[in-house]
Length: 256
Image (cartoon, rainbow, N blue to C red; front, side):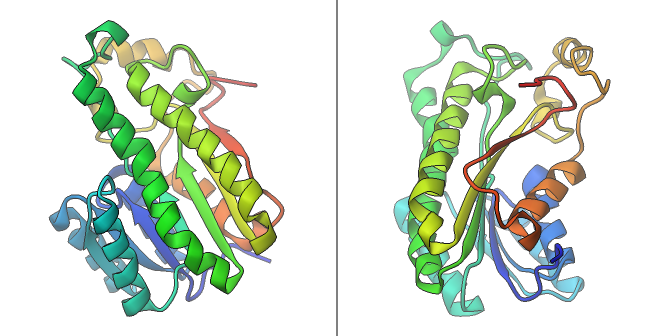
């Protein structure tokens, strides 16, 4: 067994930049055709273009994962154009800040709370709900969701409570899906990244970034490539007996 994904079809949400882009390109490099789903059509098309230049099929889908109708449309288009879906990576997410710092619980606007939960948790549910029936029909599939170290800790730098709650919910959703879908050979896992060098990380102020860096035993933030490599492992045949896990990737920041 190996990590090759020849002719498998992957859907990567939030695939237009950052971690999502890195995952989409990594899966394509191992042979997968990729649906690049992103709210920004321009970035989705840009990443899809890179994948096509590398010789794989790509489909750029402008989709708001909080919309059940749009998610259903994206999945229908993927099935029509590429024939199947073998892999779902729930990566789309937002983490609002004020002047580069986290928003405290009593400062969170209720509408913003709803928005964060809608994108980070409800969006993942929408995508899973729409894709799972196709995976059940083919009796195989891999679902990997990008959670966060904030789902496990009471302090995770600039992540607010709404972000942490959404990621903790995503971890719980992952465990339930793993149990329910195991009979169909559909494996469901999540990642709990610490600080990763992404455009979202760059929104944090320098003081908070340094305060987090010194807490990390490896002394640095992670890279998009390191996260993408872990996703590749989990969706490959090398991880065929792993399901229901929330896998830490944080440089030793949290060792549990």
